[in-house]
Image 1 (cartoon, rainbow, N blue to C red):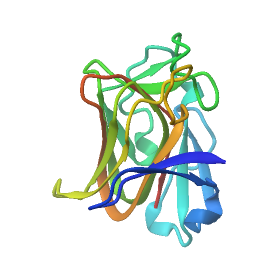
Image 2: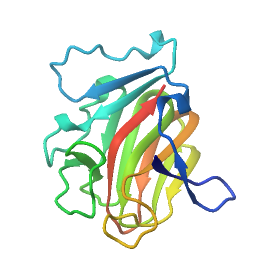
Image 3: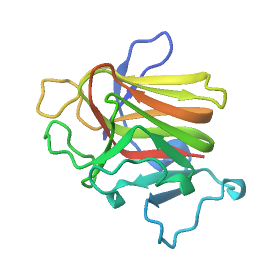
Length: 194
């Protein structure tokens, strides 16, 4: 079971149990996308996809303190204000592996832009403050938002577990932002679906 935070318009934020499985999104294909250039996996050709496909980024190929921007461009996503880290603070545990993404050098903000529209974006998040995930269309118009209602640091008194799943499912997403005011956060298992 995974904890998932959702915020729907005109409703208060809730935390609910959700099984994070491909079947929940009617996904029949999932690609584990590496940052390594010498990989033999095919580059994604969205025009030829006939079934829903998700791309899950393998962050383990990144070096600690590496600025993350165009490493996953061939998979259809470019990051802005993103740094790969191996958390040394136990309050920010990883969900899987050793490497996570955090907003840096500007703390509290991370953006991902998609080369083609996607229909779903998700990540496991740990944050020191309320964290908002926003999705935008091609014209930078807000499509949807969801939020982690408060801090979920490990070994804290928070009722929200660390590495809570935040996700947005809406058509024609071209850009997402993760934003927390005056705080820090980490992302793991960043996934987007076409």
